Length: 366
Image 1 (cartoon, helix red, strand yellow):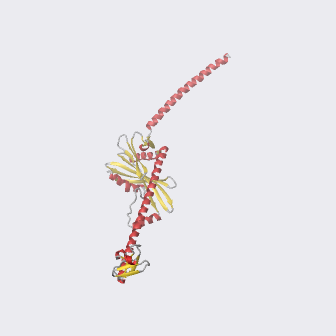
Image 2 (cartoon, helix red, strand yellow):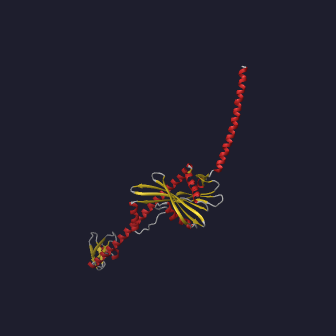
Image 3 (tube, one colour):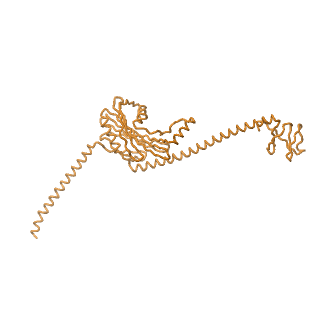
């Protein structure tokens, strides 16, 4: 027993010694890992930011990565298509030395329809002289570089930023689904002595239905201002877009707002269509009434003219309102109970004969 005990002591000592060394080693490794993680985090070229929606209790709506150490400014608002909200997100990041800025501007949604029926309706409207004016948000889809030239550059000019274009480039298109394509292009230029790159990402969804084609598309512009390398800064734009993620909880609440707005818009459109239809019916009835009155007046004039030429006149029964056409030969015309008519030049006592004197109608009252 003693021999066994003596042998156990050094064995236990070795175990304790190993555990102590392992514990010390593990603590050192954990410390090193934490330090390395902090160092890696500190040296990471990008950092994550949440974009807050003040309209839904400052909930994080989206998250994206921006260059580490750059100052971020964000603004979340909503535009309204009738009762339907459209999220308008503006993000601006500024380099530490303030020599470069990247701005992600609010997106713009558009829609358009084309096809035989739609084109026929437009041609019919044009033939009636109706102005060919697009509704708000109605615009035919176009390549992103054309969108930048036709829509965004004039917008910047109105805002006081005039760009002298020096070049442009279209990037390869990407297929997002069976019906949705993504297109990207940018324009390089100069403004106020600084380099500028204006970029546009365009998502286009195409739907075919009953021979018609329906387009829904969205334009997402961004602008880089710098004195440095545009290509290097453009990588930050790509990184921000690639890292862009939506908060599912926010999406659920925002989608409910959109659905409620769409329902309200449909109800408003339905009421407007009903009012427009009632108005059209009223106009049609009024036009018919005017036409009927005009025709009746013409018929009356013609009948009165024929009666004058033919020596006839119309008389009305003051009691029943019945009318009758008789020879216009007498100053007074009477009707007895049996419906017989009598004409005299001298007035008679109606009561004595139980007659009723008829009233001669003026031609304008025919």
